[in-house]
Each structure stands twice: as structure tokens, then as C-alpha cells.
Image (cartoon, rainbow, N blue to C red; front, side, top):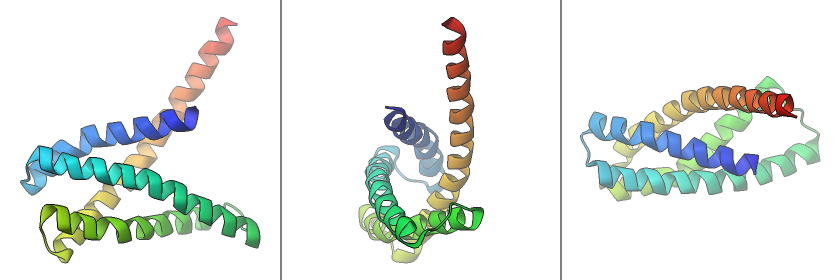
Length: 138
């Protein structure tokens, strides 16, 4: 349940922040851009599950440890995997060239790396405080 709550809150909060900023910044219609962002959010969640499934299979097979370098490799690998899906979809949906779509997707990726760090930090703090409050009520 915690993973589902985390994933849904992560995507909803990202859309609330990202869609108005990117629509304004790139001079695009918010509904058209919002639809793309929603499609990409669903694709990101599905891609995340698929990527992590195969990554963990390889991790287990080769006995990889979750060190900082491996976390960086994992993050960069996911970004490359997801961008391979998102790039043609973005170019087609917005009727823009591949280079413009690449610029937009790189902007998305930078936003999400910073956002993911901040969101997960706040989520962990909130989860620990909630657990403390629940323990205190018992």
C-alpha cells in the first residue's frame, strides 16, 4: 500500500508542479501539454516497474551491491530506457522535431531527478513522523 501511495503522490504532485511551469515556459497549451505529461507519467510508472524487474534480475544474478555508483548507474540506465520511449512520443504528440523533443525530455529528466530527491526526502520524513505519532497513540 505504501508503494502505491508513494507512486500516486509522486506523479500527482509532479504533474501539479510540472504542467503549468512547462506549458508557460515552452508556450504550449496547458491541456495539450498536460495530456502528454499524464501519458508520460503512466508510461514512467510502467517503465519503472519493467526496468526495475530486469535490473533486479541482473543485480541478483551478478551479486551487485547497491552502492552509490550502482545507484547512479541504475538512475542513468532508467533515464536512458525511459527517454527511448518518451522521445518519439513527445515529438509526435507535440508535432516537433527530435532535437526539440530531446531538449524537452532532457528538461523533464533534470526536473525529475531534482524533484525525486526532494519528494522522497519529504515523503520519508512524513512517513517517519506518522509512524511516530501512531506509536505514541498506542
